[in-house]
Image (cartoon, rainbow, N blue to C red; front, side, top):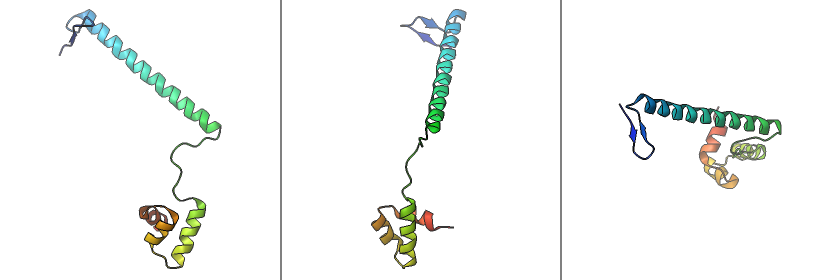
Length: 97
């Protein structure tokens, strides 16, 4: 299979064109690896500074205690979810073994 670009004068049917095509591919791969290394270094530096990534949990420790207290009082999952402002699914995950 061959690739020919009219505007960039690249034609992979020739040895020189194939070389240029491979060089572009190698440069793209190199740039991607550099980006990945920088991202990992940045995340590691942030962790060292005490930063935590990701979404905060919907059920905080306080909300978990309140949910457990309400459940022990006989409230339904739907009622607890409405009061605490979380989804029923979140509460089902909390109460499941």
